[in-house]
Image (cartoon, rainbow, N blue to C red; front, side, top):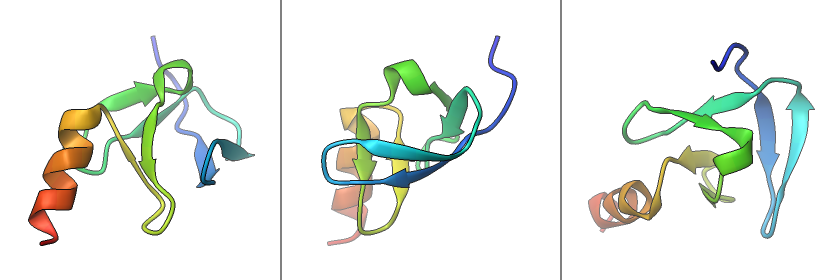
Length: 63
């Protein structure tokens, strides 16, 4: 079970943990994402996405 929200700095190829935790929240769906499963984020907006679907939805909504 995921307990503590982490604060991250999203970088081009990885992320840096600013505040320890075990998950972040998807900027589109609000789903919890375990740090072990975090694969999609936007460096410019510093947002995490649950999957490629949410990342694509976010990109589409900005155009």
